Length: 325
Image (cartoon, rainbow, N blue to C red; front, side, top):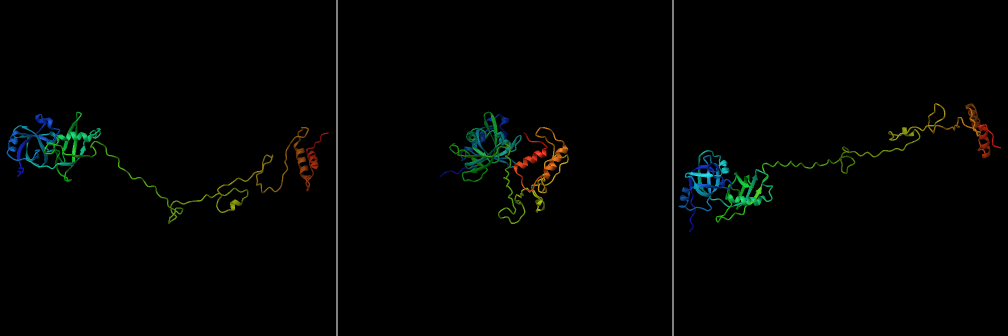
């Protein structure tokens, strides 16, 4: 019949590893116990690997394994990160008692430095470094070393093999083989937060009488193109609504110093050309002769259309010249 494991409890003075030049234990969760504790454990039945719970007078707790039994009598040497987590200072007495933790399934870590997750394979790096942490405690900040740098990681959540949230787990089995532990990362503390995502602004749908299904004429209204062709008369002014295109009335010009402006439609009478010109001989006509010739030409216009010979004779007479011989 298998013997049930027995509990063990003792009180020791907590000492930080750096204060006794034991920095080698700072990158793990193992502590140094005095040889007297080993003598006591040999007399009872214990669970392996050995696991202990360290409790302060203020009831702060952390789980730890054992590296060696070579500490000074009556003292326990703790890694610096564990000493700080418990809020210890100077020489304070803590309670060390045996415990039994379940094997772990998943641990969620929050790195303090984003450089840790920028390595080529940070999960493989953690597999190597977590081998120094056979026991993990929720809420603690562990330290790992890589390429001469220290990286801090917060243990945010811990889940055991039963898929339950627990405060502590084992990462090794009784035979020393590592537990298959899944690791999840949160955003590093020194990484700036991502800008908040803003939903895409939806374009306002136009509403109005021209929109299919619109119930009210409010909103965007459609105005058809209103074009009126230009007119030579003044009838466009009497039409309803102002025309889009307006034109200046047509103008007629004469050689006088003050030209008359008017509508082509209002000019019902044809005016003959008046002005000075040259004769067939090249002589300039005086203004009086030109005016007289123009008046005679206007009066000589018969009611019936003259023949071409008569038109030629009339033009020669008006110009006051003679035909060639």
